[in-house]
Image (cartoon, rainbow, N blue to C red; front, side, top):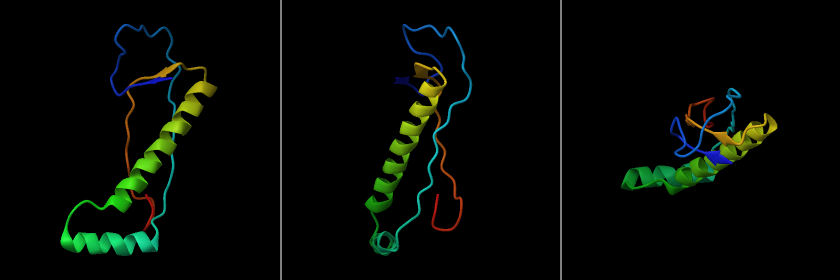
Length: 92
């Protein structure tokens, strides 16, 4: 499966537009990770616990996106966009 954030794929021609595909996930924060993150917030630097959680969520969303695209008969996804939002306290 070809996935790109651009609106075209060099050397490829779009012959059919299928429509929207999606891949979503919601992750809840862990109290232990929050404590470590709070300490890092005091001294500064990257909060690796949250960076790792975001990367894992993004990978899960991509896997679900591919599953949805393949179920609709797609062989590529163009114009991929990500967004993150707060769903409820301690989850996004």
